[in-house]
Amino acid sequence: MNKEKVLELKDLTHIYVNASGAHLAVNHINLTVYRGEFISLVGPSGCGKTTILNMIAGLIKPTYGELKVMGEHISEASSRLGYMQQQDYLFPWRSIIQNVNLGLEIRKEKQGDSKAKIMALLDELGLEQSAHKYPHQLSGGMRQRVALARTLITDPDLFLLDEPFSALDLHIKMQLEELVQSTLDRLGKTAILVTHDLAEAVAISDRVVVLGRNPGHIRKIVTIPRELRTAGPIEARKHPLYQACFDEVWHELDEEMERGE
Amino acid sequence: MKGNRNKGSTIQAPLHVLHKQYRNKMWRRSLLVMGVQGLLLISFILLWEYSSNARLVDPLIFSSPSKIASHLYVSLANGSMLPHIGITVAETVAGFLLGTLLGTLIAALLWWFPFAARVFDPFLVVLNSMPKVALGPLLIVGLGPGFGSIVAITLLVTVIITTINIYNRFRETEEGLLKVAALFGAKRWQSFYYVILPSAVPVIISTLKVNVGLAWIGVIVGEFLVARVGLGYLIIYGFQVFNFTLVLSTLVVIAVVATFMYQGVSMLERKITSGWKDR
Image (cartoon, rainbow over all chains, first blue to last red; front, side, top):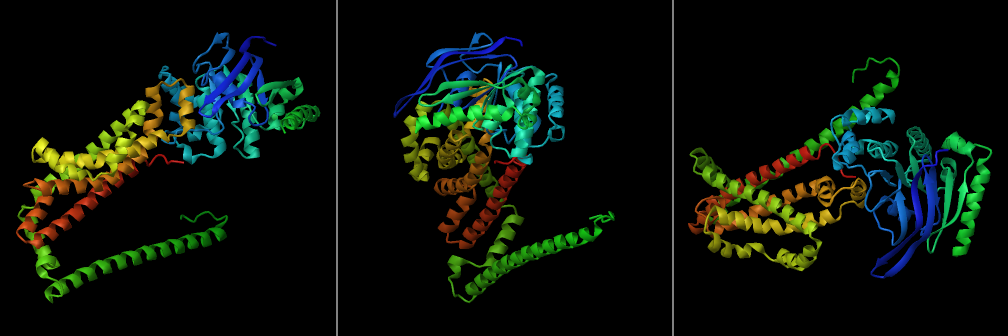
């Protein structure tokens, strides 16, 4: 396995300060992610999953600790990162092709061959018929695929996925998991997925990071067997090794929930 | 409609019939509504004519539809009404376009400088609750009577409410959309250009529609105060010489022109937002 470090978190800590006080959201997170890995963050609400993701994305600054993407410290949104949110947040006034082009426009990258690139990408994701449609004409699953295309077109190394599958129907959701995982694997991309769906986390990841709350901290990192990872999210759920992994993560989270109450 | 597909023709025929029945029903309903509307209008005009002739109402004040019609016919045919229509339409269009444009610009500045927005907030609230046309005399003295001061009054009437509406819309822009832009490293002006402004387009257009109505108020009041030409001037002139046929004819013209203007802006709205809908 290629051991190039894509992401390093050292003692990452964040304190929220607002009118009602200061609140320790995440405390001393240490994690290293290697190229090609698929990592899931799971945990109860209030464990700081999204805070961690937003720090990596450069949207909020760590109060303490170190954060490196591809060996570089980052202070603002980095072009090495791609981010998918829970909702697709396509711009309703832009056609699909214009939506996908958004990142390139904002970063003022060369427009010359971008149209051909976008069409090829839409084709790969099964969206070629929709290029000139508008978001409200597409179904939820298709729109989230457009959001994936919008992220892919800027060619980031690290994908931050903030529950991008959670708002979808089960069938569409599993198809999209499969599509995202296989696309990222084929391109050799690294991904960090925040999810509250343990089944999804176990089926899709190399490692599942179980977080505890008050303040957010890492309880345990569960490594998923290679066989499950290579099977793909739909097949992995039927694999004989799957249940044991699921139970391990479940048990860990169960203990955390009891601790909290 | 071309029922050549043999398979499923048994189903297609009734579906087709049902659709046709539904459309016929809707069509009959629309026809009925239009019929009643026409009937109401005609009976109102007939009643008015009758009451005026039979002196149930004072014909000096209420005139009569036939006198109004003949006055309109004459003044439109000899062209004496046209300059008045032209100048008033020009003032109104200039007023609501400038009001909307300036209001959007101020809203953008308030968005850009949040500190200024907090400072100016109470002043905007006071200005908005004030009857702005009351400042008319000041403007007339300051700018001199005529086109400029009338457009300025109109601007005053429209600009505050436009600023408040559009600034609020700017602030309520979907966080998720702003996050998408921020994650691509958008600068502040890029967030404005790519997200804030386009997402406010429907509100800007609907404000434009509201401003058409407000602009008419500003223009007519302005013309009451100073003008020597324009529809507001005709009303005041008719009032001063006790020619209420002139006053009412002018009102009819205003109703027609204002309706066309409003429909024009509605058409513009449909054209601009035809490609996309707000979620």
